[in-house]
Image (tube, rainbow, N blue to C red; front, side):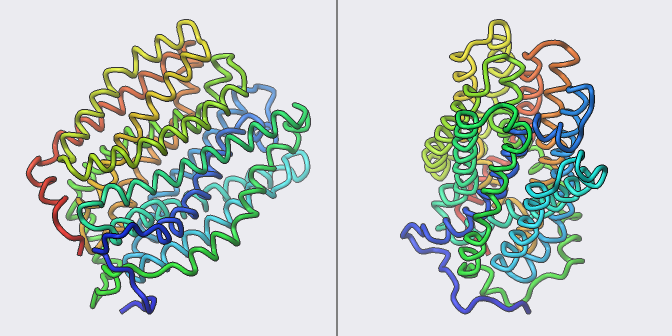
Length: 436
């Protein structure tokens, strides 16, 4: 049997537990901060590590390296997720943070291609793979931890802070980006300034370790008399493949929408010729918008049937994606871009606050971290990680920025199909039962 922390957090306490939310959320914010920064400065990174005479080729190589981090997530979900289900939520989250920190430093500190040649892109790729591997269990580990310390009638509210913590990362990255744009020349930013946001991420790593080292184990896990073996966990995922597949479909809209309104936004702004300052200012308010709507929609989700709310939101996204992007692309303006970003930030918040809680209630109990993480990781790898590259390719191939709406709408329909298969009565029952 695994060793646990001497103190455990009661699962049914009604007082809001701010401290553990901050402890698990801070590390999650750091993970997402680095992913955001990599996406924001993709054009600068492309010339440092993947130089080419063709700017489009360099950018695509950088965005595919971004996607590689997502492709490593399913492996991290199975290996680190199983470790977490066997040895405890606290130990799993600390392990994920350790690997994540190494990956962040690899990208931030590696010299350019001009300095060390082919070793530069190799190290960066390995760093991205390590970050993706850790993220495979980090995101699921945070959600499961929050779900297990939450009262059953506030589960959506507690788990929404996994996505909520990410918005602090979005806003922090946008502020840093604005400061750099206003204080550095284009040449300096291109040559070395893009490293500053990454190095700032490295600087807070010790604080993240301090927060997680003081994290208490959940009472739900601490009460377990036995823990599953790796074989049992994998067997549970295979036997529950229908649930896992449904969860993957549910993740589709969330991961694609998040990538488009945040990570891809600076690249999209350049395609629309609206200026980098607009992108970073808008991103700050996107993060603020999501942070505002998440707890509100989560409180609603704790009072209504999950399936009904998921269907309404996915329908709204599917119906509005193409018309809104066509409207924006026809005659791009700052106002139109802001409207698009804020509308889909609301869509993302409304969907994510329900989807996360619904998924954690669906996956097998004894393989909760591995099951949630694997479903999240596969969908994020296949759809989310490739989103910046796919949108860039679609815009380039069809010579139309409206094609982003096609990709967004297709994934909304995919999630709609997944949530439609959920049993209305069963989702209501799952909301009322204690996690065990």
